[in-house]
Image (cartoon, rainbow, N blue to C red):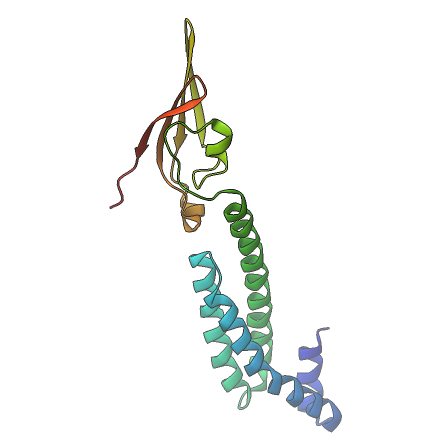
Length: 175
């Protein structure tokens, strides 16, 4: 049985020591929610940040209600677990963003090699199409939108290589 559930039952039975422990735990919740709200403000993935902020708002409402209805403690506990889970997701997204930004920086320029482009903001292509003709090798690097990773700011478009050098850049127009 979770501490919150046990605390409710003992609180209803009138156990003062547990009631004091529960009150002390509840007194720490507003600061925890403030910290979570600040963390969600810096979460790089917008949908996750919004989900986290909504959970914080819900938890604040349940925290206010628990003073008059101890049964709401179970719902508050579920919201706190959701907040913890969403915070963990934000941390994972931050690591992904940091890794991407550490290895994928700078603009592409004509004449760059494939290795140099892989270290640019364009990074790894979604797909590479290759054309071989007598004496030449041509590659078309395709960069498509990934709605789940749009928050990374990766460009969309095509890069064309001839014999290992970037010869043409085609960027998608931004709406």
